[in-house]
Structures are given as structure tokens and as C-alpha cells.
Image 1: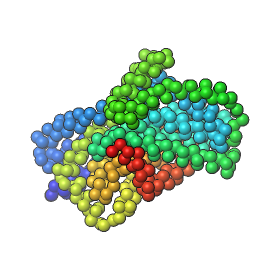
Image 2: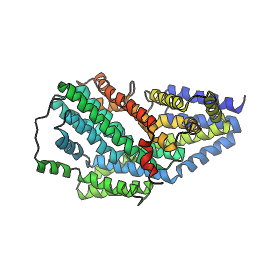
Image 3: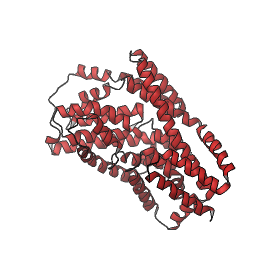
Image 4: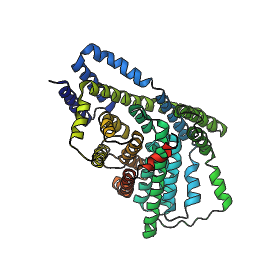
Length: 435
């Protein structure tokens, strides 16, 4: 049996383990270890189990993951983000579907300090959906807007998906953040436009809110966002001005969030303990998956199967547009069954060479991929954001209602993907300014 055949058989074995619901990180490590053993013997396989994880984990960029996670969890557990929806509601409730629009904007603000779709959906779902229900909003629109708004969390920096992608693809994480910021803002306004159009055409979906606020009340509500604005200004101002690196931005964010929580009197022992625990657990989970992907990359390189698959696909003579369309379909299907980071780490060792040979820019593809993966957070049967929303809203709202609500937003997301393929500068313009 040739080395390429061994590689293909073990990849098939990996897919079988995933279908059997084996945790993806363990499946990646086990298959890669056994594959290297089959190719080069147990001594080299055992050595690789120590060397590859060490070299991958020693990457300086990865140190920003626990820092950004701690920043987000401190903001969440210290309740620094509570004023985001209130401010958005006061300023935007007069628009058609204003409360739903406010939910999306609240998600955008929350995303800027957490980078987590799930946390964003959970936090906004508890606050925004009951408020919309009180004003007789359509349940599908109310839940769908928050579930979809949560996906902005992975696009607006800090984005854990982009940090991991930057390490695997050797792409500058700062440029990925800039491209992601543009697409995140584009998504935010596209979602808001969809809500306003639907509410205008069918006012029963979102009855007008009779509340009227004075300018002083609006300024007061805006003041409630001050803790988050201070953190965002410190982190993103320094990051995009080049004053410090993305890794240093994570450390600054962790420090700023702690200081702001302390100054506002919200830094309790329980908040610190919960934030620390969540940071450690999440970081460990991400690192196991990332180490497994790194080992798989090495195994595919040793067996030559990765190169063989790349050349096979390229030999078909497919147009680059058809290749990116095929990759998009693969990720949309994977998103129905796997969480985003697992789906990305499972496939990047094979997909990246194909994308590079097809002439696509690594920065563009990283942001594009993040957008695709976040669509998977909404699609059935395992749309993570949908299940999160279902778990925090009134039990009378069915899972089918939430899925029905996100369908409109998935259609908008697919339109945005078409725009990103047709006009790559949407992603690349801002990163190109940094040289």
C-alpha cells in the first residue's frame, strides 16, 4: 500500500469517527498519531505527539486567545454589556421593526468585546426577546433577529476563528481583523435593512413602539455603554493605529475590562472566578482541536495525500469560481452538523492548498470562511445559535419558530457571500491600506 493510499484511508477513518460523534479534537489527534505510526513507526509517532503540539502551542499569536476570552467573560459576568441593548432600543425603537434592529446593533456591540456567537446570542436573547414579545413582535422575527445577530460575534474583532485561522494559514491576524470588521458592519446593516423592509411591508410583524424619549434620556442611555466603549476604544484604537500588536491587544483588553469592572464596582469575586473558569475551559477545548489539526496537517504532508487531493481537484480544470462555490457548499453542509471551529480545523489542511493554487488571497479567504462558518450557526439540524435562543426564551416559542425566523437572515447571508466573491475589495481594501 502506497503512502498516499494510507493517508486517504486514515482520512476516511477520521470522517467515520466524526460521524460516530467522537470529539473532534480527540479524533484528529488519534488518527494523525496512528497514521504517522503506520508511515514511519511508533518511535517517530510518539515523538511527534510531543514535538508537534509544543511547536504549535508555542506560537506567540495564540496567547491572545485566553486574553481575549478573559476580556469577554469579564465583561459578561461583570454585566458591563447590559446597557448595550438599552441604548440601542432608546435610539432605534422609532424605526420600522426598531426593537429587532436594536437587537442586531446590541449584538454588534456585544461582539466587539466577546468574539463569541453563542455568548452574544445567549446574552441578547435573555434581554431583547422578552422586550420584543412585550410589544407583540412576531416570535419568529424576534428570535431570528437575535440568533442571526449573534453570528456577528465571529466577524467583528476579536474573533477566535480568525486567530486560529491566522496561525494555520500563516496570515496576519491584524489584517484578518480589519477585513472581518468590514464584513461584520456590512452584515449588521444588511440584517437591519431586512428587518425594516419586512416591518414596513407587514407592520403586524413588528407593531410600532409608542415610546418617545427625550434627548436627555437618549444621552443617559448612551452613557450606559461607556464601560464597553472605553474597552473598545482602548483595544481597537491601539490595534488599528499600530500602537500594539493583536497579541498585545488581547492583553490590553483583559487589563482594561478588569479595571473598568473594578471602577464601576462590578468586579466581584464570583465574576472573577466564573470568568477565569470559562476562560480556562474554553482555551483548553480550542487548543486540543487546534493541536489535532496541526498533527493532521503534518500527517497529510508526510503521506502526500493532501498534495494528491489538491492536484486531483485542480486537474479537473474547474474555474476558480466553481472551486470556491464547491468549498462554500462543503462548509455549509458541515455547518449543519459541526461547530464552526471544529469544521474549520478539520478541513483547512486540505482546503488551504486548493484555495492558494486557485489564486485566492489568504486574507480574503479567512474572512470569507468565517462568514460561511457563522451561517452554520443558524442552519438545521444543529444550528447552535438557534438552540441557544430556544434555551433562554419562553417555552411557548418552538424550535421550529426560531428556525423559521432565521431563514430570512440566511438568505441575506448568502447574498453577502455572493457580494464578497464578486467584489473581493470589500474585504481587502482596508487591510491593503496597512501595506
